[in-house]
Length: 319
Image 1 (cartoon, rainbow, N blue to C red):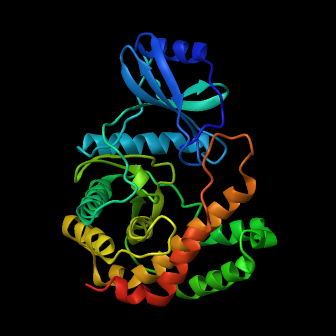
Image 2 (cartoon, rainbow, N blue to C red):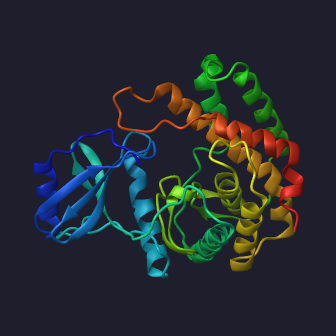
């Protein structure tokens, strides 16, 4: 989440009126994240999140994302629906951007989750995969292996300003993944970005899973690999927490199941996850506007994860 686009209070008030939510009481920009512009909106009718979709989110994909959220919510999962206005519309135009007014969920995102909380997150991911078994719409993964090649080419040697030799290291890893990427594993719609800040918790209970804007049809175990790389390391990527990593895998396996073939593929999938976030964070590091209310994220935190997976990946995912 972030703020790139300013929304005047008067325009927010008009938007709230179209939903019958009463007067605007306050609106605060949310700085975390890098994808969209987000506001925490307080109205007479309650508390909501206003999301304006910026360039990385294609407005044509919004019906897919909203249908996905409705599907999961209908099956009892703690996900936030986009509200419908008095005319039944979920997608609005605000400050010239496509936008949605989204349910606010209680809970906090954690910077330092415990093993018990990681297990709950793994269970929530498994429950989500079970609920998506009969979700029929599809969306291609634009940030899969071919997309990483494209992004690496767009970044070029400019990434060496982040760390000398980074461009060559990226090229070496792409070659490895090209040669070892698994085939034939089960596929489904996945979240693809289940970082701790996209999971809301109260104690050890998951109260919300949010930010589905990378959701796509992909190798299902890729979702687990992404979640593992996001949860099982210190924020700087320098330290691996074995208890967190194990709890996450156990929670997922108990909630949904994990085949031998999927478990065997996780070391390569985890390397792919670490490279994917190294690349996207490097691109954002080099291209985030100086005046954006947004926290840039250090790409080297995922390069360190990549190096760790390359050295020890196989032993991390054994049963």
